[in-house]
Image (cartoon, helix red, strand yellow):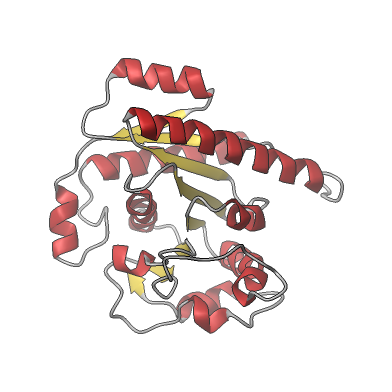
Length: 262
């Protein structure tokens, strides 16, 4: 199985989907087989971030009845592709969703099998999540890293503290339960944090690392290149330059180093 990296926004408007897309694009540019998966039940519009909303191809509704082993390569062949990245997105989302329920929600039932099948067939699987813990709980045993994307304002940092605590507790709980049946013990995962804001002072970076006790992997300032990329229908990172590209490359390097160390 390849690496799986998940992105979770600590609050709205911090560009978590943008960073997730850039990581996928940069990995593909480096010659790795990559797939991006939209796991945001509320908005479900990762195809828009990639400029694929008008392109034909399968979305999650086509997979509602999937159960059991999934042919990841076969599925990827049915997905719309941008910059070498097949994208499995939602259908636009409803803006309001109820609790995730395995008993009557086909998406909830197919989710783990689909992600596992894609991860088996690709070097890197990038998951774009919302702040819905019930979704992360269904893929938590598959992920190698969870990136919490945070703003730099005080209310945003407060939200980040809450999300980091929740993610940490959820992953530890899943791994503690998994050790009972895994042949090899699962490694614990600490969330990684990326700060995104117009100006990030070094003291703020120190405060975040000390206060949250998590690795601060990257900081992302304003990136004007994103505006021109979106205007041209290109996904983030397509031009290979800018703040978001730098952060994406740092995340990929850290993921590689973690895999080597393991």
